[in-house]
Image (tube, rainbow over all chains, first blue to last red; front, side, top):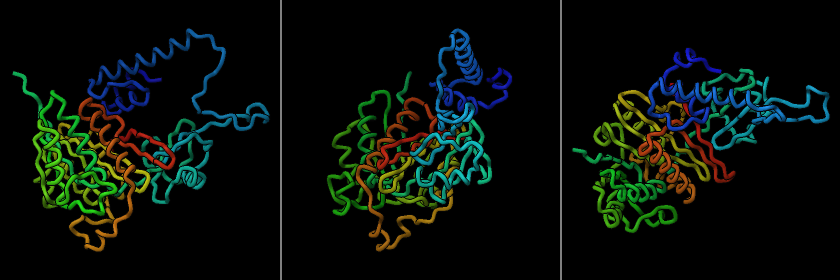
Length: 147
Length: 230
């Protein structure tokens, strides 16, 4: 959850990224105060919606996957992380694994080349960084050369 | 009195991607009454028989001049200029100016680096660059406004463009030019189409949050990326 102070300390560019990730469109030319208000409004809307609803089921957004349905309670699901390389992407159970280990694991699935540099949450990461829940991992695919 | 804005558009490279792209962008702008368009086509190469399977021309000869003739027959509202030359470090500043919209469809990273680095010296510019391998490719969007990067330049996330291993066309021997890697028409067409998406979003709608798009025909997939300015 963002607070107003928290959002106001961000740059306009960072706020636009928050808007993009939250699915708030049409914000490319808006002023900082408009961006802050829109993000808070979206957040409030989600919170109110949650309050007004009686929970009858839980909707997951692929952050967890039931990987071992017959296992003991508590060990049946594992958290997944969005991993991509170029146009290929998927949600994989790699929380706690290193970036280097994940690259080795997924190099054929995502067609990751040895030249690909890893980015975690948009920033360059080392091979020994341990992935945490909520991280987004991308292996940068080289640009197409021909035309 | 209201003056209709003029788009100064430069298309660099009229091969498999550029020869398709210039037709689509010209059609869109010719029938858009809200803008005037000045279009500059740049390519030092000639259209030959061997290009027929991928490239869209109605006459042989220099690609820029041939395409200019073809577009003038169809699109009367656009002012079109053709330059029979390649871009290099010496000519880039004469060819790309402040407030230009540059559509870069070349076949080497060295030209991409030269154009991107030059755009970084301008105050206002929109650069859309596309490239492909046999069945996959990507399109990048670089925008500068008021002397500030709004999206990353072409080299920021691509070391292979920052330190290119390839050469400019004018540095290549005839043998090297003749031995170019095979390409697929549909892949060129996809890059041209995604460049049109980028053009529409960035130039017409002023939306640019997702500044890189990858596609892969072999897996029928496409993914767009939000990139931070470093």
